[in-house]
Image (cartoon, rainbow, N blue to C red; front, side, top):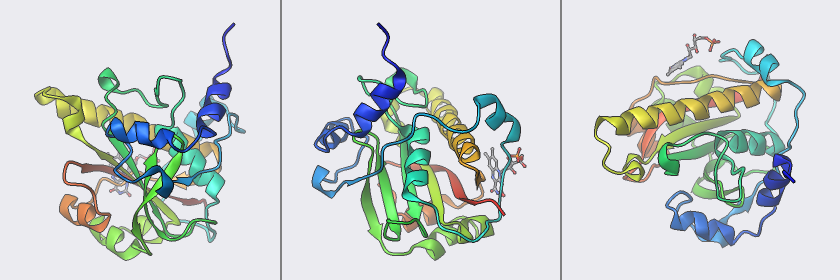
Length: 232
Ligand SMILES: Cc1cc2nc3c(=O)[nH]c(=O)nc-3n(C[C@H](O)[C@H](O)[C@H](O)COP(=O)(O)O)c2cc1C
């Protein structure tokens, strides 16, 4: 009998935190110990829009109505971007050879129940580890050429990549990273749309400034920035 995918989603989201150590061994969860991992609420397996409705109504939104994001909304966005959806650790977005070079960062400026700061998403165990405590809104926005959508959003997702995880692929390395980040970006857009939130892809940033603002690790590069907020 085929088990409903939602069973895996919930089981993985509720799995004990030490599983984060496994992800660290894969090189995709950061060096932080499991004890440092902040567990996100379990993602919901159903939403109000069909995929078709989300595709038809998705639009880039650059201005925000007043209001914080909830932790449940952030959980859902992170899960859509990189959540684990199978017992072997496969994710919402496809990955060349299953190497998972994408890392997801969350710049939390105004998220209920989450201290302002920068966090790395840990897919295994569905949690966050703190990268930098405190409000880094100004530094991150400066890295993104001062774009107002980034400066004013309650949360900004940064899709980064560790190209080395793909091995020696020559020109395919950059191609695969771009394809994977694109899939993650669209997942975020569609999930934001389904939640009634707005999001925009921001590619206009200076790599060194943005990398320093988070900061990214030496083997990571920023690919796309996605501020998310309430639609006006
Ligand atoms: C790779 C990429 C980079 C982008 N960079 C920016 C950006 O720096 N600032 C911005 O406001 N929008 C940016 N956008 C959003 C596009 O302007 C937007 O997708 C386009 O106008 C089409 O509108 P739609 O997304 O509402 O369909 C970017 C989109 C992509 C795919």
